[in-house]
Amino acid sequence: MRRLPRLLGAAGLIGAVPAAVLLALLLHGAVEPAAGLLGLGACLAGAVLVAAVWIGNLGRLAEALRRAAAEDGRLEAPSGTPLLPAVGEIAEGVARLARTLAERGALVGQLRRADEAIVESLPDPLLVLSPARLPLRANAAARALFGGGVQGPATGDVAALLRHPALAEAVDRALAEQRPQTADLVLPVPIAREIAAQVIPMEPALADGGRIVIVLSDRTRERALERMRADFVANASHELRTPLASLIGFIETLRGPAEDDRPARTRFLGIMAEQSERMRRLIDDLLGLSRIELTEHQPPIGQVRLAALARAELEALEPLLQARRMTVQARLEETALAAPADAEQLGQVVRNLLENAVRHGREGGSIILSVEAGADGGKRAGVVLAVADDGPGIPREHIPRLTERFYRVDAGRSRSAGGTGLGLAIVKHIVNRHRGQLSIESEPGEGASFRVWLPGSLAAARPAAAE
Image 1 (cartoon, one colour):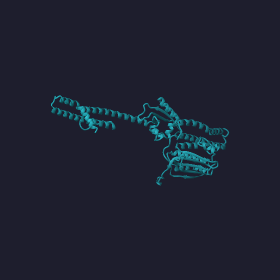
Image 2 (tube, one colour):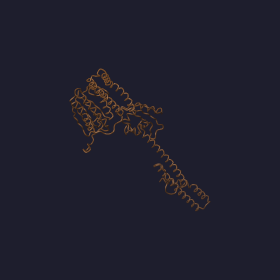
Image 3 (cartoon, one colour):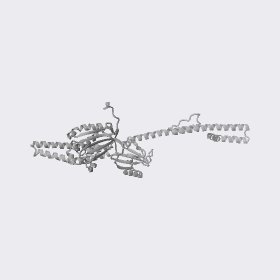
Image 4 (cartoon, helix red, strand yellow):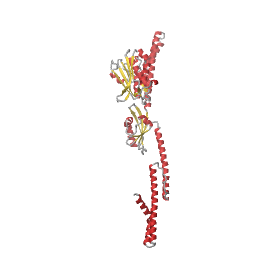
């Protein structure tokens, strides 16, 4: 219905002048009425025919342009009857323009993909924020740091980062001054991390609407290394002073008054051997604790069957158990699976807790070692490793400080038992790295219980052939 008025209008535009001339000639008698009317009819019919072809050409050209706009920008020549020369020239010009725009679009797309590939492969985490400060995009390093869900409303670690006062202030300054800003952040959960942030304002905005780019650099390892060096010097100089002084004193005695005293020399050499062994254990524990602290902010990978691990550590401690005449009741759930987990570090947790129970438990007493499924305080599913002894127990006021370096409830008893004062500190840092929880319960005279919750589950039992 819309085509007819358009056709009549175009026909009138084409045939109006010749039709008006013929009509004027008829009115003035310049031509015969029959010939004039025939010519007028032929003129109008020709105008309608030309208008139909013209409108058809323009309609097919418009349809081709619509297809080009809706698809990939390529303009295909209209099919059907040949185009009028003027329309053909227009179609050819538009096709050349479409090809040029398509080539430029392809180049822009290639450059954008190259930019995205560069950003994606950057080793430092990168976030792109909208004007409302919502995450729009994150590279692979950021997704590994904060998890996959970093787009949209900020949750979890990303929310903690964006709510940090130092970062919020840096974003405000960057938008106000339109200059890059820096901020040093400390994120306490789920594990303490020290991050240097660079905030870069985007003007104009990025293609996805991003106005703020945040580049993060995790300085946790470097700062931990600095602290490790300082702590190692301080701790080693403090804790090694006593055994070193003993060794120096005995050496001077053996060189002087006891030089020819065989019984004294034998006794002194025994004491020196004990002090040397204590120094070795102390240095090993200090180095081990330092290595754990360096990687504490990086969650482990892999999975560990806790029952088999606990059984192996228990067998290795059999000589120490026999020396103290102690027995162990083991309650091990064979399918308990800790994941993600580091087998070597969890072995150290079991070993340290068992050694702690043996050294500080009652001689001739018993130890309960258990591995089972259990939930943490937030009802998250996982597995629980517990070690309990029937020793003298620990006064309540000492429990919060048991995981501090070199903290001892009874310093003299701890040293005589062969402890370095670092075992529970090592346990705490390993549990932190595994995103677990350590709880200690004790009453004087009723023994002590150490409970470690770890993320995990009960795995399907392995067939006997696989054991």
